[in-house]
Image (cartoon, rainbow, N blue to C red; front, side, top):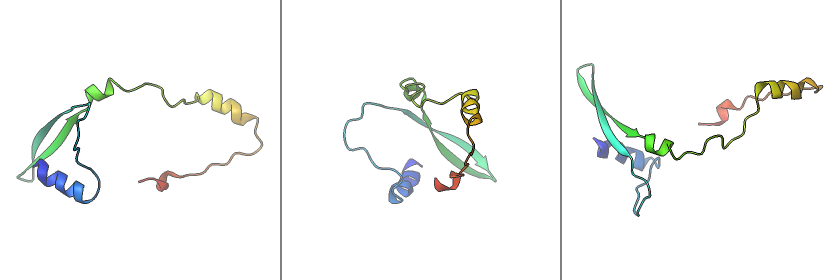
Length: 87
């Protein structure tokens, strides 16, 4: 099951194979379910060990009240929607 899914992703350049030693290992398992009488498997990666290494609050975010106080003194406010720029 893994080979079929990952070969497709590899051909699309979505993933790459690791050919050297990695400092992290993650548990991967398959969750099976039956959809319309067809047994389907989904690969699940347990990221809890990786989450323990994440540095919290790396990207500083202003409090909502701080933003309101800042724009309150401005004459003009420009809003640009760039949500469709990202895939």
